[in-house]
Image (cartoon, rainbow, N blue to C red; front, side):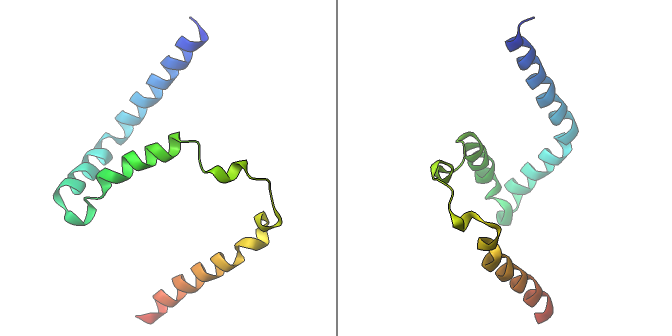
Length: 92
């Protein structure tokens, strides 16, 4: 058995395993997407997620690292998210 055949067999086993484990969940999701207008966008999310996963990510990986990529550059977003989460909880 060649390496390619082993990889293909492993991929098939993984897909079949996920299909068996998550069959009921996927059926429920698809029924919700089809029957409930609030969740009908779910049919668009799966192809979009697959496209983004297969596209190799963003082009920012090709840029050289900068000082803005440090841990400290994310504090405004983290504080805004925390503020939003706590303020929503306390408003009601």
